[in-house]
Length: 275
Image 1: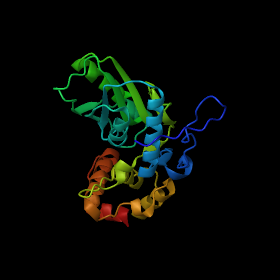
Image 2: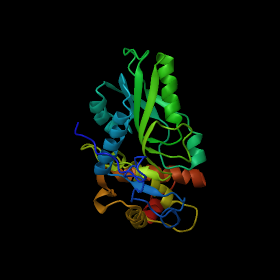
Image 3: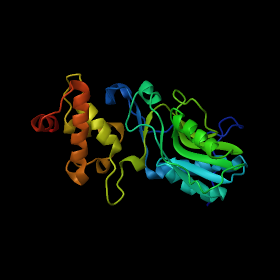
Image 4: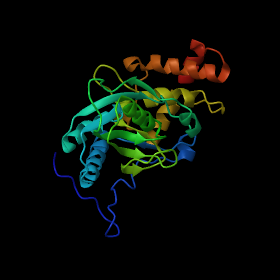
């Protein structure tokens, strides 16, 4: 791995992350009726932040026996940091929430371990480095720690993340590149993999924007406009009929309609919302 740059210092003593003032921040009062500000990440941003996280971890001079990362948020950074700390990496499948939600809604969610750590690997007395994209409510970290203790008694667990949300997190990560209370949209959420398009952000937000009970009547064009205001680029936005996005949007509208009105929307109603 190439040498990592030294972070700039502001007072001659404490290294300051170059991501302290990350520029992609929207105005919550103007851009989202829920009052949620956003930061739109892209792969070059994620690469630089991963390099900064690796620099912090190496500077601590800690030694590790294994890297553990939640799928899929920790995959990108963990596979790169593994090369720096020179130890094997193991994925674990954790599922907490599926969409952009308010603080109380997220805290009420239960963590599901849908892919446990491999049972044939002995983690007893091992120094574990956990890498993830964001420490939001810390529920995933708590579940991961319990899972490790259920398997074997590990010697230590050190956590490194790209983002941490101080207003939400119940546990502080050991290494953090940026602290923010904005909703981060990571590139692995809305970019395609060659076979299928993953549009989690849009598939979750568009039905909410279209069916808000505020009389604004946001349509497809309005959703695209909001997405551009938040910081997405035109080439990153979904096509209504592309890669079954309409099917996902339709399903989301039906779910949202049932939540608000307790009934299924007609096809004509859906078409009216799109136009």
